[in-house]
Image 1 (cartoon, rainbow, N blue to C red):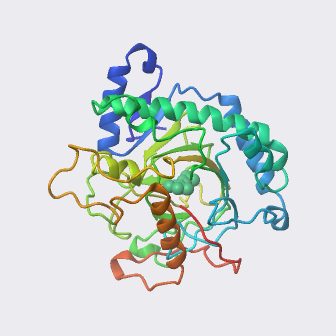
Image 2: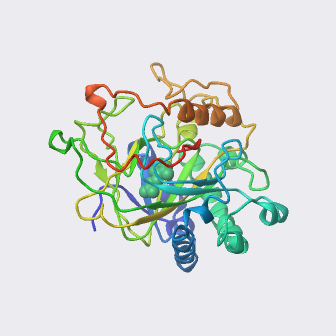
Length: 352
Ligand SMILES: O=C(O)CCC(=O)C(=O)O
Ligand SMILES: [Fe+2]
């Protein structure tokens, strides 16, 4: 399937890193999203994580909720329709967040529900592969910006606890139609949002539905009814990577943290969708200030936060999602329909 989202060939990391860095920079400043082919993560290991999450999500709710989501840790199981990426809504998606495990003792003692608990070595080794890949990516992004190679990587220490989130996700089948479909308002499998951290690596299998807001829409928040978003198809041999809010902040908006959502397309909304993501975050004490020389007059940050530490920022974002849980009546232009939203399951605090 074709895509207008840029595709980056990671084989160039050894043969022509400067060309690769240039392509990365264009993708990050334009779309904020790109696919990576010929990446260093073993396909068999990716397939094995998909197999693991299918077994995990197939269990009864009572098994999965043995490790419920704890906001302070940003870890645990979140039932479908219990929270929304946009805190005003609920999304028909279940997920489990797993923290980074910097040491063997983290690996041994992390609280995990059945099936995942027996897969600690597999999860640990996958985390390691992703972390060394993200280190390379951060170095290339620094190179692309003409900065010393360790500029970003030194604030993402794999040996430290932080808010990295390895998240397994399952979207049960939903209907593609919604009461307001005639007005062009889609139903969502995950409501529109930007990601909070540095970079997100998304692994998709075969069922699509992810859509990205194209760069020509420049207003800070999207209009839900009048914009045409671009599909980011499920290309299972490629990793989809996007810039998060913090990297956008450090670069004063040069690299884009782009809005995205998952919709139940007519062809695929009736199918189970499985994905998993690694949300890369900086060290907790890393301070959010635009880098010297990057800030241009007129730049309006996406959120209040200059001078906050990453930890303060993440807690504020978790509170914003939690505090926004009371349903609001959307303004006309922002009207949203989430047809599969209400199942009466308990509400938990959540991170996008
Ligand atoms: O599962 C997907 O396709 C996207 C998930 C996502 O955007 C998120 O969890 O932040
Ligand atoms: Fe996201």
